[in-house]
Every structure is written in structure tokens, then in C-alpha cells.
Length: 312
Image (cartoon, rainbow, N blue to C red):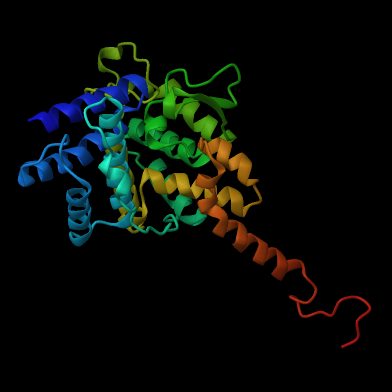
């Protein structure tokens, strides 16, 4: 089908010219595969489909109960796809330009308390039947909570993971951009203990591996999915709701707990690897709560006192 060929060409362009990561390309492929199914059902192809058909497609997604965020992502994929077709001369117009974006809220991230993070770490250290797994999980959790890395950045850390200064991790993030992320003393200790005594247990026949967290699987390193499963198992052991625990939630915990203890939003932005401060501003609710706590703790009226020199 011509539509499928155009989609494949579009995905090749995203990978070659924009350098999108594999996860991003897979997301585009999945979204456009769904759209391709719609085209087949409608006996349409991208060279001819109009804005009315696209509206029916988007309305169908909405009627199916897709969340506004998912709808917005699908619409973004469609817009980029049709913009590509127009730029390549495959189409003379861009029908997606007439589509309205679905209204979407910005939900607050799920959060773990500091006590819950401590319980997860305690359970990781208790895996005495498997000391290698215990050391690896402890290192993973300590690093994630100390740095707020994206899970793909965490499992894809190279070995050795440091730059010129062992107090900083050398992280390769989105767009293949490198950044230095400070590492706390507990995280550095857990990492060094794991790397020195247990990392070799995860390498077949002690062969060399370029990864900090090697695996015998196809990728050569621990996968995001496997780490997520390990976290769910720890949550059960720590008596924490599994739905609350994921690598991304721990990334949110890192940012939220830092801000709650007085960190600057710009500094947190840099450590998270956000290109735009607006992305980090999802955590402004933490800053507002901190301001309220400061007023309640230090303002004389909030503590039931009259200001100096004022008679009640």
C-alpha cells in the first residue's frame, strides 16, 4: 500500500535527519500504524485523504476513550507526517493544518514520599539470597534517586560512567547530548561497590562490556522493562502500591524532593536534562507548598503573634 510506503519513508527521515532515539521512532511507528489501519478501512491513501476524514479519525480516537495527552501525541504525529508529505511534493496541501488540538490538562506527576523511597532502598539491600542482584538494584535506585535520570539514560550508562571527575556522571541524553550530573556520596558508594564486586556477575564468561549495567539479553544491558519489573517486585516487598512505583515516578521524586528542600528550579531543570524550563514547571506545585510552609513557620501572624509594635 502506498500509505505504508510513505510512512516508512517518513520514519527513515526522522531517524536519519533528526536523529530521533529508537524509543521515539517506535512511538511514531505505533501511532502511524494505527492511522494506516484507518486508511485501509476507509480505502484512502495519504495522497488523497482530506481534513474531514482526519477529523473522523481523531473523533473516533476520542470516542474510544483515549486520554487527551494520547490524542495530542497522535495529532502531533499526523501533523508532522502530512507536513513531510507536503514538503516532499507528495501532496500539494497539508490537511492536518485544519485540525484542532484536543484540550489537555497537565496532570501532576505521581509522587513517592521520602519514607517510601527509603523503604524501597531498604528492600533492595535485603536481597541476601542474591547479593549480586541486591548490589545492582541498590546502585540503580541510589543513582536514579540521586540524579533523576531518564530510565533509558540510567540503563544505558557506559562503563566507566564518570567523566574526569568521579563526583559527576557522564550522561548521554536526548539528541545524543552529553551532560554532567552530580552524584551524591551514598549513590557513588553504591555504584562503586556494585562495579567492583558484582558487575561481572551479569557478563557472560566475564567478557568485556561497554555498559555499567550489562545483561545477557539482546541489548547487552539491562532493559527499561526489566528494571520496571524489578521495581514492582520491590514495591510489593516494601508494602507500597505497585501502581505508584516506576522509574519515571522515582525521577519525579528526585525533582520534587529537591525542590521541597530548597533547590532552585533552574538547577533542577539542568539535572533533569530539560531543554525548556516550561517542562520543569510541572513541579511548581512543590514550590507553592514550600512557600506556604515558610509563611506558616516564620510569619508572625501565621504563628498567632502580632507584629512588633502593633497592639491587639
